[in-house]
Amino acid sequence: MISVATWNINSARLRVGLIEKLLTEAAPDILCLQEIKCESHLFPA
Image (cartoon, rainbow, N blue to C red; front, side, top):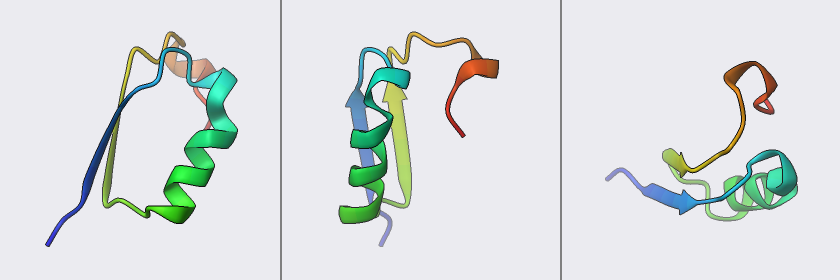
């Protein structure tokens, strides 16, 4: 079974800590972020 999480995050750089928490606690196989409002070269890796 595959788990998928989606999030209309509205600014990924401001919520990077929450993204890390979600990935750690929920551990989805796939995370889809919408409205990241960030250029790809500035997206937190």
